[in-house]
Amino acid sequence: MRSLVFLVIGITLLAIMGVAVLHAQGVNSSVNFNSGVNVTGLVASYYVHLFIAEHWIEALNASGINSTALIELINEAESYANIGNYLSAIITLNNAINLASHLMTNAHVNSTQTVINNYVSLTSAVNNTVISNLLSNESLVNFTLRALSVLSKSDNATYIINMSMAILGNEEKSFHHYVPPNALIGLNTTMNILNMTYNALLSAGYNSTVRQIVIIKIEVITISLLTPPGLRTYVLSRVLTPYLMTLSKNTSRAINRLSMSLNTTIPTPPQLMECMGKINETLFLLMSKPLNEPEVYVMANDFINNYTTCLGQIKALINETNTTQVIIIKFMNITKELSNVGLSNLTPYIINTYSQCKSELINAFNSGNTTLIMQVLNQCSYKVHNYEGEVHYAIWAVNMTRNYLSYVNSTVQNLARQHGISGVTPMLCYVELNNSIMSNITSIIKALFNGTISPMEAQTLINEYLSRVINSTPSLAAGCLGIPVAPHSYIPTSTWITTTPSATGELLIGTNGSAELTINITNPTQENLYINGFSVGGLTCSFTKAVEISANTQGALELGLAITNNRITSVSSLSASGNVEVSQGTTVNCNGHLPITYIPAVLNGKLYLSNDEQLMFFIVTGAGTSTLINYGW
Image (tube, rainbow, N blue to C red; front, side, top):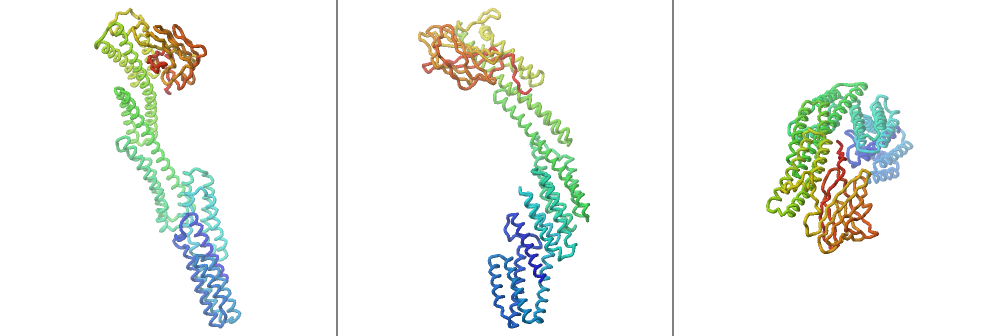
């Protein structure tokens, strides 16, 4: 009877192992657990028990013994089997067989002994089959590999390992009384491997890369310790090929991206090829050489060290590729920005630096010298970073200059009308001044781009030049139009002949976080003007009471401006002079902001009149020239 009990224990453990792994993998129970044992083994065991029970019925009937109770148990077992509960069916049949043996023993002791002997022989054969499958190294390898596969995809590694060790521990407890000690060597080795996995994963924490490397190492150890050389080659290839293919694909992908970015063929780094060669050497020894346990651990460590080295080198190659692409994209974007604002004449300096960087990168990657590659990448990153700041400043300076040239054109046209100069002369005058001013600004930017002067020197030169020409704009316009003026004389705009309202502005920026805006207004009409508000750049303000300018007079609005974080955001004071009248209690409400202009410039402004008309005017900035823009240079 001990054989029968042992049979049930073995089959139960088989069921637990199969169901546990299948449950962990989330697959259908019809999928094989391993090549030697599967869930259908319970079905086979059920039919063996059924066969034995039915023969007991025949034996009881032949001896004239009532077999009704036995038949009822068999029917009950079949009902369990019909719903797939083969384990309960086997237990029920086992009870039926026990009952039959007792009935037979009580009735005919001698004739029963022959049947019992046949039964013991059959159950022993079944037990031996189950035991050999459960304790075979191949089954243990498959069990461990499946558990490791689940571990690599699960966040609950502790539970899975503990469950796997509990299954194997129960199996060891059940078998150690019935099998010789050497039959449990593979089982004990597997339990040690899982225990080692548990400790290694605890040390890895939440680092997914380290956890993956731990699992790969355990897979190599498991296969190498429990699989004979003939089968080991196949199993190691099947398990490790996906990892090695990933290394190869990532390398090829990075090399292809790098080659496309640099428009040439970049070779695989020699150190990476050497690393992959060491992986293959170690793998060959693991596959072909008979190994004892210490050798397995040493060679598994060698394999993982080589694999980790290759992984790090591929990661470095991918980072180098990404950095290279970023540098190239930045160079291209800079040239596009310059072309989009009409400064394509400045792009050759950027393109020359880009071509130099590209050539140095190609040479560095062809050499395979990691230190040289990083050195060139850092140098090119530094260069493109500087160009980004310089180009941003250059575009801003040119845009401010172009805005100032609108003021120059307005000045030329007004002077020409005042002095009766018509035809193409005013236009030619403006073109001359425009070309001269833009040429001077561009020459400073070119010197900046080719490294002749530093960014700070460029800003200083542009600030000084614009400050000089802005302050002498009327004189420059007059000289260009051929109007006689004394050297360094100032031609006041207030004397210009006009029949419509006009205004000019001046913005003074102080060093104490304040600014002052003065708007000079001329009203040559016969009607009073009423101003509801004004705007400068992105700052728009409205008066709670309209500001009045009497007919055929002029005057000025004087506004104190508040600066916050290098932006003008509100009006702190309001006063007037001349024939501009501000009613008592008038306040100013503002929206938006005006960035502080750290460059002499001419800004566009608007006055909003009560008749819904807008009066455009220019505002000359008269301060900020001593402050330089910080672009991270």
